[in-house]
Image (cartoon, rainbow, N blue to C red; front, side, top):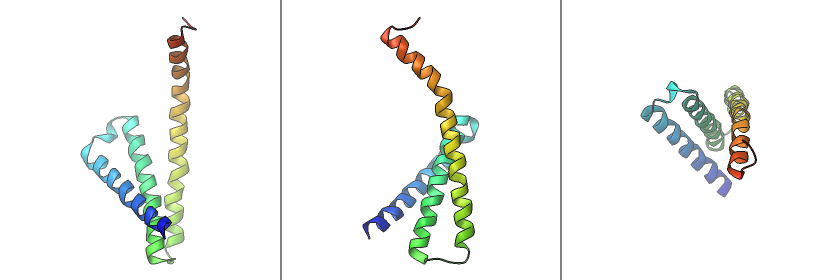
Length: 103
């Protein structure tokens, strides 16, 4: 029961974050904003879908909706990994310079 409550809370909060960010900021102007919006939206979509299933049970349309929702998550996580990997060399250089190891 507690797990179900947490799933619904997660869905509500993730959707609220997505809506506030989506309508309150110009997220489409740069890649960081687009990624942040996509990440929040995919988490919100998956959590909302899970909450709907908890509340409504399995319905005929659920398999298609689940495929669409979960299909976004690997794409957004891959995008996040690419951002991290691109930032890693600069982070390593910053650490070396702060320790005085490099010039």
